[in-house]
Amino acid sequence: MINKSIDIWKGIDKFADKEYRPILDTYILKGERKRPTVLVCPGGGYEFTSPREAEPVALQFNEAGYNAFVLYYSVAPEKHPQPLLDVSRSMCIIRNNSEKWNIKKDKIAVCGFSAGGHLAASLGVHWEKSYLDIKGIEIGSNKPNFLILGYPVITAGEFSHQGSIKNLVGKDPELREEMSLEKQVNQETPPTFIWHTCADKAVPVKNSLLFVESLRKNEIPFEFHIFPEGPHGLSLATAETDDGEMGAYPHVARWIKLCKEWLEINFNK
Image (tube, rainbow, N blue to C red; front, side):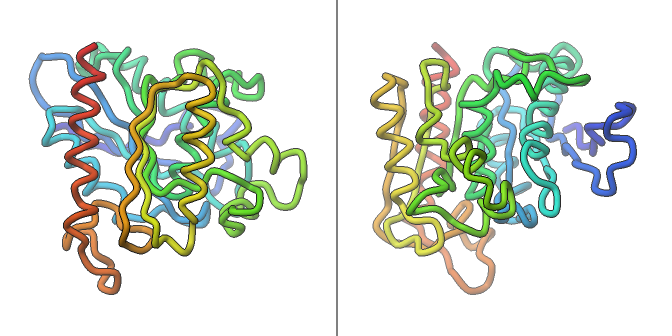
């Protein structure tokens, strides 16, 4: 496996003086066969990036035969659009190195959890935005082919996770509208796998319900799973990703198997 950490803005003058350096970690399988790829965006309320939703998830996608990457994107005090610039830049790095890293550049999924799910979904609906057209980003090359969203923050409205939205855009009403992603789904939004638990008290399941309804209205293919039990932030819902308090939830842990099956179907179309 090729493991290295990439400073995604290295050599780009606009970001030369950034105090925090977003990092893209690689989990590239050896061999000459081209493989589908998953880019993982951990959660953390746009305040930090959770290690429980990073490498353990990437390794699961490796087990399925996919290359994987983990993006440690910009968080507070950085605000929108910096995280979206980071994930756009990362997508372009992955596609621009597709020959070197044996990547099928038309089979790249972005997977995000909680605030990372918001970031992944943001890329899915906002990849064409003009403010992303800067040095280091090619509009179109930044578009994911598929989305995987785990208990995502979606709305800035009544059911929002206010901490995440505040960290990202503050109180600006226009930006809060733009970052209410259920209102931004369009015909170009990628097919989506999404899961949540009914018992999530931090990010209500209504977030996923709102996004799924918008996908349905726009005739975007999706697979949606709601599990009856489990708190927010479960990651793989296994003992490996337990934080010492929430425990393992074997029934919820089935989500990764279901997701791999969904990816296999879609990657082979």
